[in-house]
Image 1: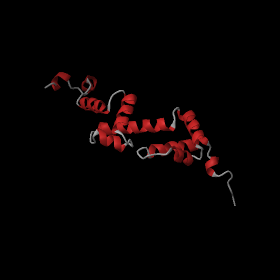
Image 2: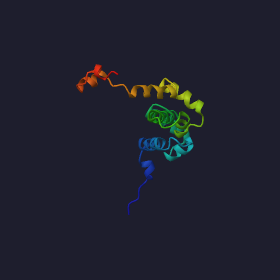
Image 3: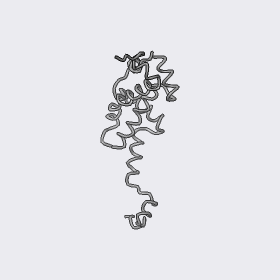
Image 4: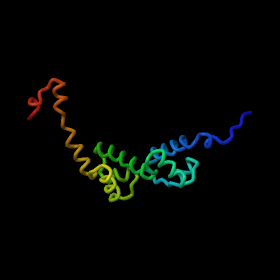
Length: 142
């Protein structure tokens, strides 16, 4: 009978355990996450987990989670089916103000302006595409 020592979670090494924790953040980003629980999932103490995560991924787990939420929010805003408040709640924020502030800081424009910019570009077809398709841009003008 084979027995494994140390247990598998220790044999995996820190990189695999960190990847598992990051996958948890990716799948559960919209839920309220407790850093202690995520660190426990990776079998690290809280502070050791933060140090290793920052070293491995260049940002703290909280920063990673916030960026993940904002990226998902950008996708939902582009789809245009939900209001900004609904998007805010859908990606796990509790406050529209904190969502808008963070979105503006990371994206460079407010969620409303981001959505409006995307909506304005939907009807735009670059002239190079029209030229490749053999359609003269003048023929499309109303």
